Length: 167
Image (cartoon, rainbow, N blue to C red; front, side, top):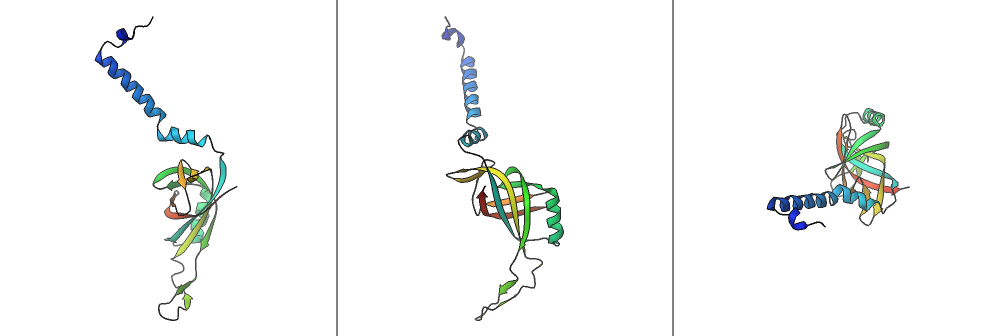
């Protein structure tokens, strides 16, 4: 029969056993493992995410779009947390060529800074889960309005999620 008192006869034995138990609990309760366990209950879906990058400081937007499309996979950072790679499906230039003039008439006029005030809309593809907290991408909840940073070999741009669809 196993005698516990002989096994734990010294205070260092008690300390070693308690540290082992604490480290095992820490491993089991780590955020990555608990996020993985949470996702086991949900079906992974393909997601289409649209990200708007307002007032992008790009001198030649058409050349930039071609460069990004050639890269295909770019890094995504959600709320300052690196979230892996994401596929770029399309990039659109969205802008309003008109601005309102100050005064009583509120007559729209053509914006002379149109080439410097580009709003780019990235159409991105990835996979994720839908939960009560919204869509989960790489362990981070993603909702419309969430801040996103897109990073490639030659750029780092910040924007906001404008649309999420699962298909």
